[in-house]
Length: 499
Image (tube, one colour):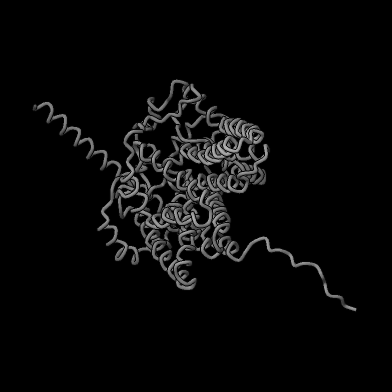
């Protein structure tokens, strides 16, 4: 006799929206561009030199770097310029070691695979430069970028319906600067930074208000890794600071002195573990520059005159002008107050502090940059904010109308962003300095629709030759720019001499 089962159905591990995100990631994997270029040379050099040479010797990385990176670093005889060496005899590599730490599982696996294959006669160079290594690094970056989006979606759905979180995740994934550094320039640090910030924020939110000593230690480890990858993300430490100060104030106000001691202990553990995990950065700076606190940067910080407006709206890689979907995302952080007032104000405080810090930086525009690339780190904030804005619209109008509006606006902004990324990657607009929005808009309507398909075929089928063409164009622009600057300096000197 057949009996009916009384067991409860199994809970699905992934929702339909999460499955859709995974599938979209898999579909877009062919877009990952396996190359090391620009700033990525410095980031990747840590991983390659430690894995292959077992020391911080970046000589081969500099000599084999892309042409635009070698300019000013390699002389006409093919030798490294003596000015590139520090007082300790190491090459001046001011980039962070954090990305190398995150790449290490993928590169170790690639290295083991290469060694095994060579034993069977494959003859693949086990030098860190051959294709298996670059593919492993590039895949690692793409995976971390995807995890940043997935974690952001997971956190956003805690406050809004899954639909709004999903549309927001897609919007920020493809409507911000993230795709440029998740797919096109995977050797840079921004996608990894987005992952570590999302992980830190998610765990802080998950454990806030009732954190054990072990959880404080885990949070500290996440914070240390986050700063290892991208130093400016230290601004996220504002979150546990605000939380702790609020707890101290509440304990003093209610005379609950017995609750203070656990928080003090937790803060100490958090700080100690954070510093311990950040020590790889300090150690490399000590080796390269001779001091734990010499990070190798020579740019200035203007703490009394932050360039708020320029950072947000300049044609020179302004955050909102290049990626306008982020305007909606930041407005949505205010709308989040309806769901969690304290959390919303914490995120707003983090964004404002981050904006202030980047506005004080001499090179706030990012020099060679797609949009405000420094803000890719805040991907999780933008997904939450955009989702909250969509949810707010659904409360003001009917759900179907809000969904149509959200999907339509997201589609338009994503298409605009992908078109602009195409223009930037193909040098239809300058990669450095301000662009002409009139020219960019004209290109979006006329050139991009005509050339995008053929360029995509070349990107997928003849990528090596396409990248060489892009690199030659970049070198030509750099030389032209340097020539113009030299000419202006000459004219200024002549003017002073005539006076």
